[in-house]
Structures are given as C-alpha cells and as structure tokens.
Length: 476
Image 1 (tube, one colour):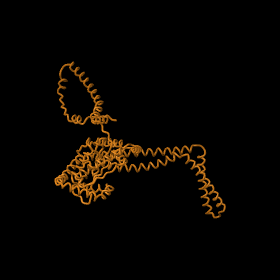
Image 2 (cartoon, helix red, strand yellow):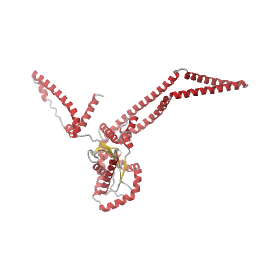
Image 3 (tube, helix red, strand yellow):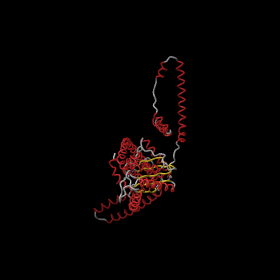
Image 4 (cartoon, one colour):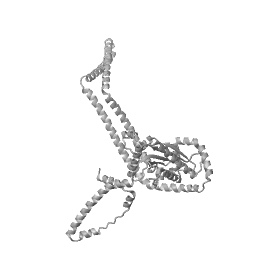
C-alpha cells in the first residue's frame, strides 16, 4: 500500500472513531500561523539558547509522537464507550415510488437509511434518521412523500392513487410480523389523521432478495462467495449490507444511489456472465473428461479395435470386388477406395499399438487435458480481471455524475416541496368532518379490496406508471 493510501486510510479510521461533536469542533478550529516568535529566536544571539531550544523542540516532538500514538490506541476504545456500535438485526423496506430501506437495531431504531433510487435520494436529502424509532421515521418519510407529491391528497373514487408497500426481514419471525403490523398501522393512521385515501401492502422479504441486494453492492464477489452468502443468517447479511453501503458512501463522499450503481454495473456484469458461462461449460467438459480419463481411454481403445475390424471387413469385400471386376474404370475406382481404406487401417492400427504398448500416448493425451484445463482457468481469471477493470472505469464515471447530482438533488427536493406542500397545507386547512371521512374511507377500502390484491401483484407496473408523473423532476 502506498504512503498516500496509508495516510488516507488512517484519516478515515481517525474520523470514524472520533465522536461527531469532537470531529465537528476540530474541523471548525482556525489556526493562526504567527511565525514571529520563531524568527526572533533564530535571529537572537546566544548559542546556549539555541541548544536549549533544540533540546526542548526534540523533547516536545517525542512527546507529541507519544501522545499521538496514545490517542490512536485510546480513541477507538473511548468511541466504543461513548458511541457503541449498534447491531443491525432487521431491515424494513418502504416503497412508495421512492424506495427506501431502513436498517434497524434490536430496539427498532434506525442505524442506516438506504436510498435505492433517485426518488428516494431526493426525498432523503438533508434528512437524518439515525437513532430514531422506526415508527417515527416512517411517519416522517410518509409526510415528506406527501409534501413532495408522491402521495396525493385528492379524493380517490374507484382507483387506487396512493399505496405504500412495507416489507420486512428479520431472523425472528414473530419480531418480523410485529414490525410489519406496527408500521402498517403507522401508515394507516397517517392516512386517516390526514384524511387521505390510500392502502398499505405488507409482505415478508425473502432472504434471497437480501442476498441479491448484498451482491448488487459488492460487484467483486466471486461465485463461491456469492454462494456462501446464501448460508449466512439474516442478521449477518444485514450487517454486510450496512458495511457495504457505508463503504460506497465514503468512496463517493455522498449518499450513493444504488440505482445508479446497478445501472452502470449490470450491463457489464451480464456480458461478463455470458462469456464466463461459455468458458465454464467448456472447462467442466474437459474436467469431466479428465476425471473419467481411464474409463474413456478404455472406451476409445475398444472403439479403435472396432474400427480396425470394420476396416478389415471392408477391405476384404473390396478385394473380392476387384478380383471379379472386368471394367477398367470401375476397377481403378475400387483400387483408389482400397488404398484409402488401407491407409485408414494403418492409422488405426498404429493408434491401437500406441495405446496398448507403453504409456507415452496415455501420458501425452492426459497432459493435453491438463493444459486445456489450465488454459480455460487462465481465461476465466483474465475475463474476471477485465470485468473488474471495466467496473472500476464505469464507477469513476458514476462518481463524477453523482458529485454533479448533489446540488441538483437538493434543488429538486426544494422544487418538489414548494410545488406540493402548498396543496398539502391547503388540504389540511380544509379537512371534512372526521366521522364522515372515516365512514367513507372504510367503505372505499371495502370497494377497492379486489383491486388491492391485483395492485400487489402488479406493483412494479403501478410504480412505473406513477414514476412518469415525476419524469420532469427526476430526469437529470
């Protein structure tokens, strides 16, 4: 690792282990560089003074190094006491059109908030949900979504204009179910308290979906590592997901959009997978042949004997035809055919002799298989290196685009809020009688129940339809 990389890594570790309030105060300290005392001391006469200062400076430097080393040791311990690391045990997904994942600790408090598309990136810009109860955060997200126009306040008739899909995954199924029910009630209460017509859909996330999300953030995982992920616990997968997302955020110096990552990596990955699968098939065929080499060798030897017997029989027939043939033209053709058969026979006889006498041919063929296996393995390594290099190149481009998006995302959020918050406030100031609304809302839920079931099946289609409403805002 280069010196520059070591220093960067050390800086990141120091910043991670410093408490937030300490880090902010250190960054805001302004140092005045007044070198007047130094120049005065240098220009003043007296050798003893210089020697004394030299010893003092040397001692001070040694003390500073010792103090710095002490801080490196004590700060991580101090940080663990002041800011103990939260253990992630569950993941809650909130899908409105902005798609958001909340990573939760054992107390159902938010440890990490993942923006999974541009809509979510805009909605979450400037928000900090870490350390807050998941119910409170859900209410804030739904409120933000309403102020930004993702949830409409217009009265629905027979169509479902507002829907929220809540998904959860946790090692403990009872906790998972309780989490879903509590968040579902939170969203339903928001609908009723603000007199908004909408439905809440809930489902358990599959472990495979969590594995896929981890894979999407870790593009350099090998196939073996990807398979091993399936055997990890949900808790472990949640931890890996949190770490991977945090690393990406550091690398891009901002909340990284998972949608952008997948958009740039997926085409490269699909191309790599196609090439890799072709090589894998060839490699497996050769490895199978190598594993069953002796058996195949015996089969080929028997096949060689059968060919010899067949050629000898065909040559005997040709000899008989030549003896009986009187037409010179046909006789010449038979002679040519006989010579071909005899050459084939000699070739097969030589091969049989090589197979049965000594191990030279046996070893040569076996070594050829080993060489072919190594060739395919080298091709796989080469293709993987090329794939990772292409991904890195694309990520540099994405990083540039994300850096440029930061200011735009902030502006887009302001635009959305300004446009739709007025409508929301107007709606809140003109709420109907609550009892009348409650009765109408209950009847509406009964009437649209069959559509709710279909909505859940066609969730992606409905999302795409709603997404077109915000094309002008989200199209960067």
